[in-house]
Length: 325
Image (tube, rainbow, N blue to C red; front, top):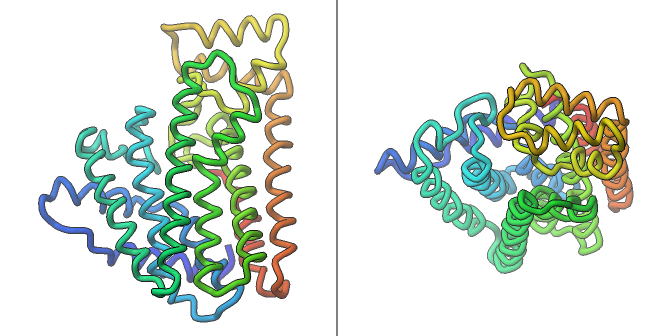
């Protein structure tokens, strides 16, 4: 990442550190501070700042409202980790492991309430649109999570269904983050739509990379349990494609591992990973990921500002395409 992006992240981190949610009872507010201070890439508020900076120079005006998308994102993580029974988040115990499930749910609820406090800080003439768009985005995130849970009991999930799910669960929030920056910077409607599409394509590519990293990442760099999707038979693009394309011995082995109730997790991860590599599933997933990253770059190309203004967004996109965690 270049120095400008690093400066923006430092400012976002400082503002997050300064956020005041409340103090008592401690078991309600401590988990909020815990998850927000675990770090993370701050991609969503960063996208808001970068989108705003395409059109305006006074980026500090967008920093506080941009925190809304980061708080909302972390709210979803609290609840998602409970649903997924995830033990680790960013290399540390998840909130429901550090405290308990009920506390994690309630702390997440407070975070959602505080999102609106942050959005109410935008210019009065933009509040209605900003909140209406956020509500639509938040509902789609919930729809995507429900689809993801429904997939757990569906015998088959198509690639189109999976892409739609990650579009809602992950990508629309990136699209909203960028559109928020554009709206607050008084960008024209065409550019706001391009920013939204850019974020959605970037978000789909981002999630497909997450799926790949879950299987193939360096265990010390990933920050989450490597192979967790394989252990739980999560229907990622990798597994969906493997179910569709494997034949013969590979298909028999794949279904045997999917149906097995008692197994050594490390052994299962290694065996299914080997199937993905032997049958070319990994390469197919990489191609699909790159397709969406390419679409995102094309959206960015069309935004009506100078190339010099786009440097930071291009640098961030390159970083996301090459990340290891």
